[in-house]
Length: 88
Image 1 (spheres, rainbow, N blue to C red):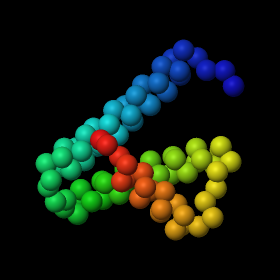
Image 2 (image 1 turned 90 degrees about the horizontal axis):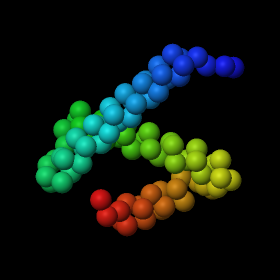
Image 3 (image 1 turned 135 degrees about the vertical axis):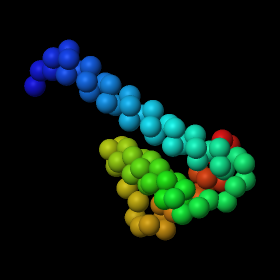
Image 4 (image 1 turned 90 degrees about the vertical axis):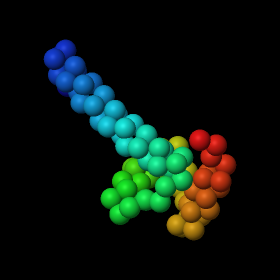
């Protein structure tokens, strides 16, 4: 399938908008985290949606690389290890 320049520009613009929105959501989350604030229900939903998005992306990338988890507890262990080592 061939794409015209206009179609390609539109796709790039849409992806850029999506990435900027995700980055803004992440910055809002980090600002609250760094301030040591507790989170309200709306913020918890935002946190969960962002984490689920990135965990899903990580799982797909790992599967493409041939890495599969035996069960949820194995995945949970790696997530906890990564969170403990996170320096952000």
